[in-house]
Length: 470
Image 1: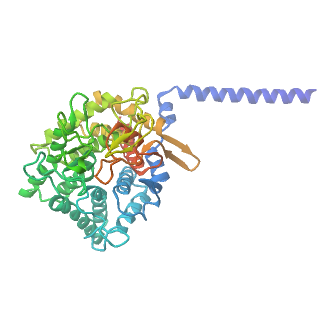
Image 2: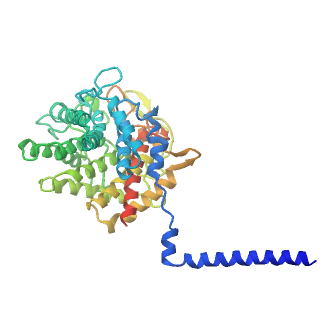
Image 3: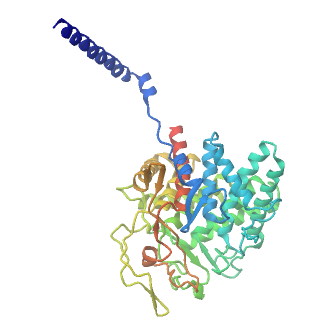
């Protein structure tokens, strides 16, 4: 009996001691110092996405790639590579990020850097194909890093490659001819004569601007003219595609709307030559292109204030069309999920295309690149934080909640538009209508698509930087 009492007494002492310790912990947790120590750091989603799908295991237009380091040259892989480099700049201890991008670059250029190549040995820079130039942005970071560590041979290769891309765009790329609206505007591609798409501003202007900023002769007449040329691309597209009532830009514009390759274009005013809808990712490319160019554009250039004004107009419009519940954006920006394919499709030359009743949906890549552009604009002082911080914070939280799915070995990103475009004549299904953006064969809803992976990493790096600065 005494033995049992002794054991009960010891047990009671243990309970009381444990309760006492717990109370000390609880009391200490109420102090400011304890709160600081116990604060849980936010998840670094940028690193999770890089390691899940940035370095490996991603799709580009529904083609699966096992590794970034062994992938061929295209704008989607380039976007991922750009985002992985941005994550490395934020977290330089992650050296594997840098070396994966370096391996991608080295695989796709010749020994002297004078020609970008495909695995077949042919040039990866197609004739007047602006998409082929976007990945060139990686060469500026690679150049600076290799020069910094004394690897002048590779540094020169990367400088040569960047210069090749800039010169090809500035001096060789097809342009809208004098006498037409939008003269000197860069074609989106040779197969789209006299057409400019919002996408193209992201593919061409930033790499052109980076070269002028970091490798151009600052006091040369050519330097000033080049910045005017860059600015002119934005001025043309904003003039012809911006709808002041909707505060959005139409996806594309043709200076020759009666050309057979521009069958999708409006044939009458208003918005002569414009496509018919406001496509999310197209707006995203445009929004990001402006903030990326403004970051390096000389503030004393007369067109700086023009591009800044356009950027701020777009920011106001996108804030207006942000989904209030989720914080993210729809595939077709001016509608919600009530908008559906009409079930009748589009008739082109007597044939019917794009028949379905699929509903408009919240889209990952557009939402990610909008979030990136808002956050970066605030960081650079281009957007008022009091006006846009809630928009950006809600957007980022919405990205994670709506599109990110955890799994045992990492994360996935869902609900991205695989691709979208307009024409040309040989592809009559790409009509630019509501039916097309919801039902078109190339606009399937996919997951782990590179255009969503890259833009989400960029948004996450900016958001993680934003939290550190608060």
